[in-house]
Image 1 (cartoon, rainbow, N blue to C red):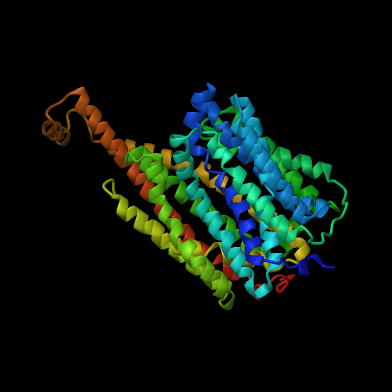
Image 2: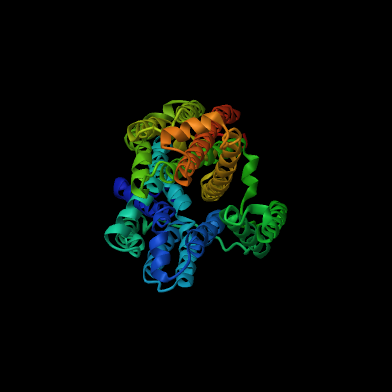
Length: 505
């Protein structure tokens, strides 16, 4: 019996179970960020050491993602999903009971690795239980999860840490994960699995671990270590680049590669992945910078910064089921272009921010950008998977998700670096004419009550705020142009956009 033809007795319940497990995993990518201060304080570590709680998860998650297809072929899709959820629950429990920072970092690394297959394999299983005309609904649901979960992460993490204690950001995964396991096993436990004992590509696996692992560490630590001024970052970058180049060459010539890079021979997979990765990276950079700017320059708390960003998830929650239900009637390239246009216009609206912007205007622009987000993930994912056969979907989903996550890491590092660098440049430019002998400076000091260290400090604080304001709006404008440029990328793909429909195009 073909596993693709197997249908669960309750498709809606099965979908909820798959989505919940994915939500749990995506939530954990951001939920620990706001709890680092409590974690390091409780475990007696420095704030710099505490960042390894985030880095270890990201590194191992990035390594595991492209292995999804290979693991699915070895043990089966349902067994891989169930095993990943169980191990994610178990490692979450271990994180919660950790008594030292090294323990927590080790358990977070394990948690990140076992979490890797969850999103792509849930996507693969959802596609398999829906007919082609309704697969858009499943993809739209996962798209909604991918948007809402990272936004809720800092909010829920801050609330749990403030009202209970930091271990609860991990313990909360236990009931969610157990429920998801019970539901999915009851619906898909009897699904026939096609497995193959393909040889293990040890060379490709070693190059993947070394290259991706080192690259992720460099991206996470680059800003803290002043990039190439640090020997660690310099040598780490060399190791990562050489390893990744060697991995690409090896995987393209290996008979049983651990990562199926040959999928890029499909036109739709190539351009769909480009649109997904670059669009997500710009989206990630924008939504990384906004809360940071609100907290460091406008005095927002972590929770209120999260609430200001949260309206971006409202429209996707409302619109995703509609897009999923009727989206297949529209050219996916058109939907993606509209998404990029909406996100670009929202970015330009942010470029009009001033230091006096209020919560309402920030939230309304976030709400408007939700339209673009609602129309982005499902069409872009549909395009990139449309050339693939069912046996290639796990490979394609894992590879595209891996590149999307890696793009987010690049966006995170580059955004932070660019923001601080441009602020320093603007600070230097603004202070060129501000001296103790400047008439304008003397006039402003008189308004403040005269020349004093306190008033000079107030002027310095004002200049710093304006420098970061200019840097922020310049970055938002840059992202606006990037979104508009991406509108052209998806038009290199060709319909039809159904699985296998555009094969070899």
